[in-house]
Image (cartoon, rainbow, N blue to C red; front, side, top):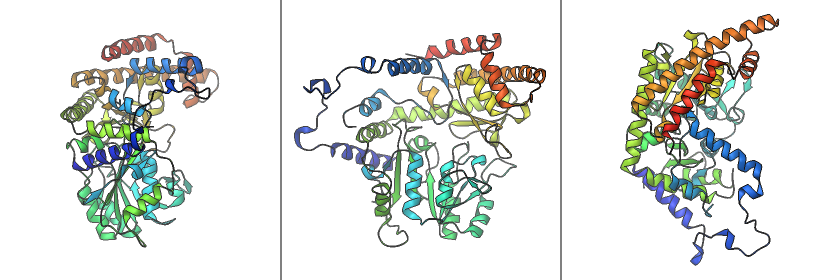
Amino acid sequence: MSLFRTARRSASISTLGVFSGPERYLVDIKRFKSQYVQTKGLEAVDPTMFRLLRQEEYRQKSCLNLIASENVMSPAVLEALSSVVQKEWGVNVQSKTAMSGSNANLYVYSALLECHDRIMGLDLAHGGHLTHGYRKGRKKISKVSKYFETFPYYLDPKTGFIDYDGLEAAAEQYQPRIVVAGTSAYSRLIDYARIKQITSKVGAYLVSDISHISGLIAAGLVPSPFEHSDIITSSTAKLLQGPRGGIIFYRRGIKPTGTGSIENAIDASVFPGHQSSPHNNSIAALSVALQQALTPEFKQYQKQVLLNSKALAETLTSLGYSLSSGGTDTHLVLLDLRPHGIDGARLERVLELLGVASNRNVLYGDTSVKEPSGLRIGSPAMTARGLGSQDFVEVAKFIDRAVGVTKKLSVLAEEQAEGAGEEPTNLKHFLRFIEENDGHEMMLELRSEISDWVEQFTT
């Protein structure tokens, strides 16, 4: 918690430093007497965008948002974001604030490594993230794998947990300069102490990417990586409930290869290495979000996120669904759809048409990224809307019914494809079929029920 308090203080100082002297005031732009300043509102200047934003506002109010990486910003954070301000550990938010968590990772790699130095990260299909390095055969999908040499570590297929012994054996052979401890679709806790033992053994930096669980860490509800890591990166818009951006923490006293400190190396990597003008309004909004993270209300919210995720996982299990690793310790749940004869791409689209936001996700053993076996869902956004544990029992039942609808539509789509002489299992045909049959009775009934149910949580 103290590190997040340090970041909050740094963000506040950075925001104040934008202006000098008595000009530190919020200015009403309509008071500018200049022909060169547009003072009309959005509806008058760009009615098309105004209409699109109103449609998006309605969608958000009526949509059941289960995307694990999305959340809701408080009015205070939004107010700061739209304002004119557009020891052992250290963090300088002004120079360490990246435009996203993905950028923060790249800045750290560039600060610590030379081109083609080696990085190890959890394999994408096993719950890792693209920015931890991802390649498919010779094809380097992530640009991180283009700039650096990347090698994955994996889950134990028997348990669904990270295979730390396998990681150790691979690290001893591969000799990476960085090992990334971080995930995007892994519902269990990370043993940072175990990974630190491995990085110390092979002389590598431990970089912990806490983008998905930073709020839980700030609230003290899951183990903290700060005791063991050399560098910590995080996005700021997920469980921290801040604006979109990234933040970098670094351990003082570490010397990177060459001369100078790790602090100077990261500073230079952020600016002038990768970005220029700071987004001062985002820094101000982040300061507000970090202030909120110090409150009892924030901790209670994070507790409810975990309770809701548990309720979702337990109900889905009771309904006969398989979950990756058998459950969850965090804010997300990863469904394995293989026993149900459908894939994440089909279910994702059906849910979207029903007013439920989710995302398909690759699972270990998958051969297709476009038609993966998994569906990733999470509790943060709807917990912020006021849903409790019993409400997430209902959410699980909605998902179960959506799976049933997807199965029935898949059969109808295959019958139509066969009649037309097309490949019956073709994903494009299925997507076209459900677009044409969006008004199917079973779709309309469930969509109306979900929309009515969600709107009770709209103020």
